[in-house]
Length: 223
Image (cartoon, rainbow, N blue to C red; front, top):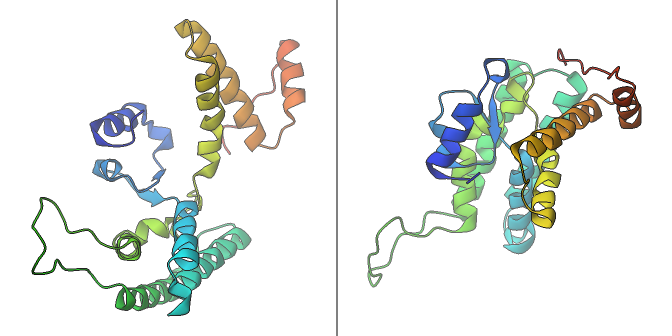
């Protein structure tokens, strides 16, 4: 699947299922935002970007806004995990105020870069710094960044979904594609079953034994 353009939009629209319409959770790909649904953004990627800004772009020498944004996100995740439920509105108001304050601090140090008089105008937008682009994204999509804390069932990161697909991509690179559609269907049926059981903390060996005994352990679809 291609990440951008209509390919991504068509793929998600075709695979959307009414029972899975809780929220669309992804990395910040613009084409996905065309879909009319609730959106959530992967915060593992935000943390990596903030770590890069903090450690490599000398932000900690001026104002530790990047480090404090990381701490704020992780604090929110900890509270949600401890509650086992979204945060109450008053608590979210506190987080929103703190988030906006940190964005303001970062933007004061990383203002928009305007083209100089000698700059030869090119098509498109003038290039901005990594810090500016990150701050602009975290401000514009702050509701999606904090979706994990406001809506039940939305995770902090989509790493688990990526991990489930990663071995399939490794297999494709090592062994190539499948010779038949039947072989591909069989492979992904097995992978899907085992990944589902692993997420429900059921021993995979017991699952495989039950399959060969023609009495497979069934996943709990209510989870």
